[in-house]
Image (cartoon, rainbow, N blue to C red; front, side):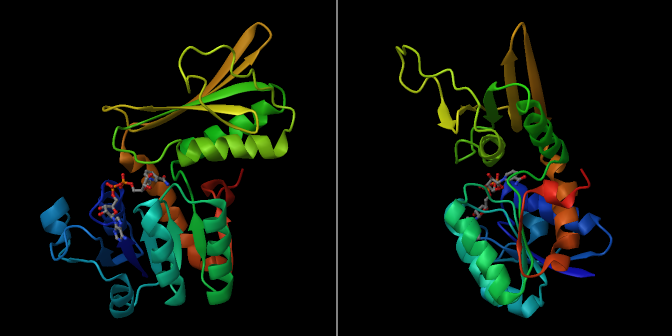
Length: 264
Ligand code: NAD
């Protein structure tokens, strides 16, 4: 049994992760950490068949529960401290929190090496979203004009989404000849979106949405749209479970992106 502590356990993703761990053979939920809902049980806050109480002391929780893996779905301002605490407690980490910087990722790699723990960070744990990124990168070899529209629920804090950033960055890293059609003459500031290496990103936040992305390629006489929709947070769970099951086999380094766990 792999012993897991979930941080952000009272949040939307955290509750779902706790449920997925409880449902999966070979996984054992031993800790639930959150700065909110302290002292309440997972049964009380999420109706889960589990009497674990939420604590706000991660270090103590990891120690007492003898956790082997920490899963973090919190906030970009909180995740790095949680990761430092886990790594120094020799606990491997699976991180879904978005909004981490290049420097953060570098530090996670160093922490994994120094403490000989595994670290998997994925801005999107939905298999379909990962395939969308892979297919977009393939299409960019031939189609040099593209823009990204990402659409998320109104409570998402960071913009653009980690998935949109990674899609744009992956393409920009490989193809230096992507054509940006420029700002044009704008009567409304920001209307052409933000830009990474020639790839424009437009962020939409609305109630009723979960997580969606379109990569639109324009070419002579044709367009190609590659779109992924997560209509439910359960879409992320097979990827999270896969990462939990394999993270301890990858001690000493950072794995960034779910695609690295797949046979593509
Ligand atoms: P949420 O606001 O519902 O939940 C976040 C939880 O973290 C809250 O309960 C909050 O109290 C808790 N928290 C904040 N700081 C903390 C700290 N220092 N220690 C412990 N707990 C702390 O948000 P959410 O919708 O569940 O999203 C969480 C994160 O996951 C966001 O960064 C979001 O973008 C990301 N996300 C990633 C994926 C993916 O596939 N990688 C999918 C969806 C969401």
